[in-house]
Image (cartoon, rainbow over all chains, first blue to last red; front, side, top):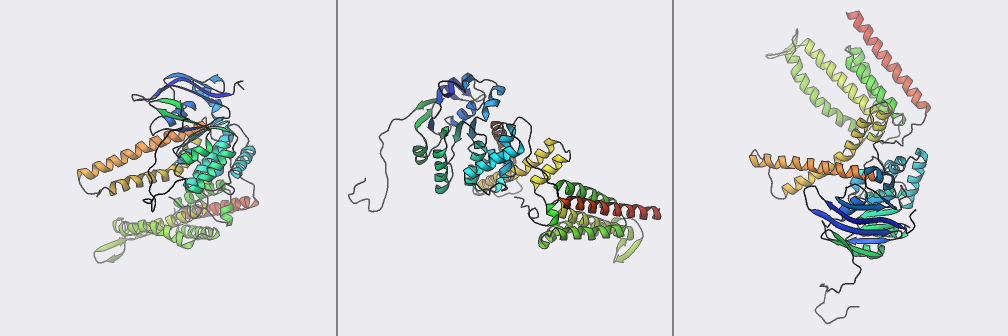
Length: 242
Length: 255
């Protein structure tokens, strides 16, 4: 692979919706092996678009995209690398389209040319790893929201990616499911970019923080002084916070 | 959501290869549909009942489905004997029931009940997923099979989206009526569903591309050899041939 461990390198990438506003404006973004980046930004600032551009699902209007050390422009440049980058979609229903869990998880490995037996083995191992034993023959649309999220993660991990692009993975999960997912992310030896609005998740899973505004992306690791207002009982009495 | 009530089960019929069940259900119903003699139709009904019993289906669920069918059949009994030309069999007041009409209605009732029962026993005892794969193995084009499977997968998601939109309308006091406002709101609702569906399709296709999809589906399913498959095939072939020959024989005698 490339010597300097750069996995993703965007140079001056812009994206504009057909006839609409510019979502990404001359973005430079470098992502190296081992990075665990948290991406925090307001809704509509282009985070999902950025992921889709990196995956080659949306074609940028200008700029170059370098992934795994090579410039990628056309669909056929992206096909061989998609399985090396796992994109977890915001809505798990978009990702799980097969009737049963095992078929969905095996879909990726089968597309990569694995035999049925290999695909089954990989899928079972992945499900086990995520603590989803016994889910094989469950019907995907009958799973709960949290289960759907974990199964979508399994469908991606089954392709043995090197990078994960996680689009609000903990969104709408309950506390126990959330901490389960955080544990999984901490244990995975993978580089990833994680979009989230939840600070408890970000602080446990990301090493560096980026934000987006006005079509730009920038590193935002500074500590900001801020004030909180909060209410609690007998708060009127003089007291200390530790 | 379509609960696949009959799909889970441990009967002999459940364990038969879905391909065999699909083909035999098709041929068997075709033979029943083309038969006219009562002896054949009655035997077919008996065989279908036997198949349902062999599949150990829940009687109440079976009856629930039959009542829907019998609703239509009732309609036929009310219309066909009164309107079909022919000798009058009996009269109630001014209404004359023609005997060919009564025969026809009886045939339709027997045929449809027998076919529906056999479909419950043979087709409903597999999941839609298994049916899709069976159809694929039987040479139905991939595109149609995946249209079936993906429709089945997303029809519920669409229904949820529909329910969400309806709820959003209701909480803002929407009451359907015969006025332009109602029609317009419904048109918006349907339009919105189309927009959501196409946006969803776009996202699903992107998600599939991300996982290396290039237009070809690979199937995991393998049909395991089981001696009961052969036994069942022989049984169904025997029944179908028996019914068909007797029917043809009766028809040649009559003509």
